[in-house]
Structure formats: structure tokens, C-alpha cells
Length: 130
Image (cartoon, rainbow, N blue to C red; front, side):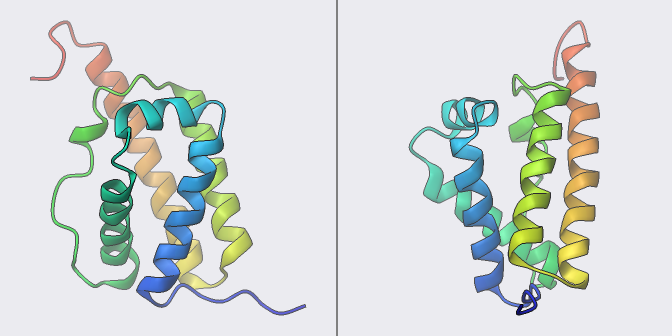
């Protein structure tokens, strides 16, 4: 059996992102949330995700911005984050191996944890996001 490749190039990042978001769109829990928010702007969203992960994993600084604000008002709960993380981990594990693959899963887990906590915080504030 051939060993899986490492995440080394922007093409690797694009394969990861494209495969992951195909799974997101098809998922019965996450698909409706993402499709409602993104609508017909998937190409724009995917391009942002390429730049984000290229910056995070490859150290090529092409993403500038704050990832959290667009997610602050999403109608999501713990099960959404569990499913998101399971799909991300499965995608990475099926496509790649090595240090960058492990880093991608670790960073995704930390990001999901932070987003879940911040979304819950804003939901529980009496005046919403300030």
C-alpha cells in the first residue's frame, strides 16, 4: 500500500479544502447551514479557505482578515462542531499523512473549540454582538 502524501503545496491545500467542503455540502446537518449562508458564493468561500490554510499550514501569508466575525451569528450548536471536526479529520486522514496533516487536524480542533465557545458567548449576551 502506498503511503499518503504530505501537505506541501497549494495544490495539496486545494485538494483538502475542496474535498472537505464537498462533504460539508452533502452532510445532512452541516449542509443546510453552510448552503444557507454561502448560497451561490461557494467559489469565493473556497478561495478564502485556500488562502487561510495556505497561510496556516504552508507559512505563505496570503490570508488577511479575521476568521471569526462571519461565523458569530451562525445557528450552530455542539453537534455541528462535532460533525465538522469529524469530517475534517476524516478528510485529512484519507488524503494526507505527516506533520502538516497532524497540524491541520490540531489547528482545526482548536479553531472549532474557540468558535464554539465564542458563538455560545454571543448567543447568551442580552444585546448580542457589540
